[in-house]
Amino acid sequence: MTKATILGFERYKSFSDIEQMARAMEENAEFPYVDVIPLGNGVYELSRWLNGRTKCLEGGHHRSVAHYIMQKPMRVRVVNKPSVIDEQTINIEDIVIVGD
Image (cartoon, rainbow, N blue to C red; front, side, top):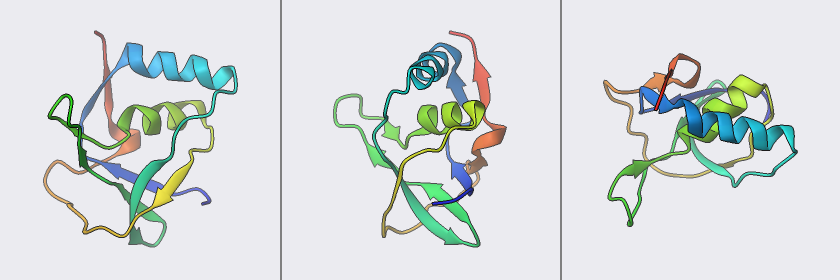
């Protein structure tokens, strides 16, 4: 995939988690794919899934924000699922990074 707009559903992410991922990227670490749903015109939505251990919705936000900040390509897998665009949908570049 080339440059795209990625939409997520979490407005805030942890500074320490993103910092860890950024450091790993500097060491050329390879991250798992992030599942995305195509919306058209180069726009994709992070695919939501329920983490069975934490009972929280997940989507790859930390990885997406870290790749955006580091300007590194992100590995994605396009999935055929229904979109869940709602009032919480936010562009990855607008997510606020908060201290822990």
